[in-house]
Length: 182
Image 1 (cartoon, one colour):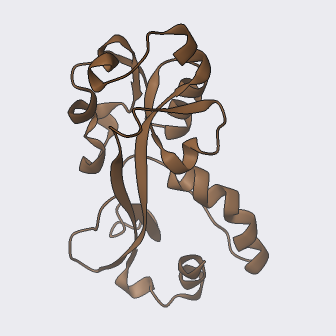
Image 2 (cartoon, one colour):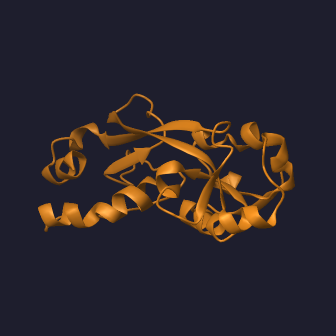
Image 3 (tube, one colour):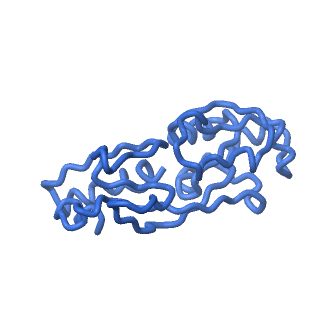
């Protein structure tokens, strides 16, 4: 979500400041190994364990339940978490989640029918927005989509943080510093 709704829409601003910089974005719900040089910079959902990395909390964010207006018009009302049992839930493919911070669906919705599943938050949001079910969306992403309506906003709200992490030896490399500062 961070890559798709925060980084990608702002790449043009970074490119304007640093035209020679080549930026590659790998947006996935799996961990990346900085020690294996799979990336120069990682944005993660948790502070990495101690090691040869430098990590800093980048920003907090919230997640909540959302549905499309059309879905809510066609289905029984949702007044409590118990009502979710009658609705398909759009979510990640659990086996592809490396982040423990994303293994919380059962705590929120209990034993509800899983609907469409994808490792892509963009695909999940598209499915929710077109009426396939109810999904747990990033509030900053859902706010940009007028088709989405919050569901049980006062009951379900998950808070998480994004962390920016780099290998210690890269922290003063000009291209890395330019991206981090941006």
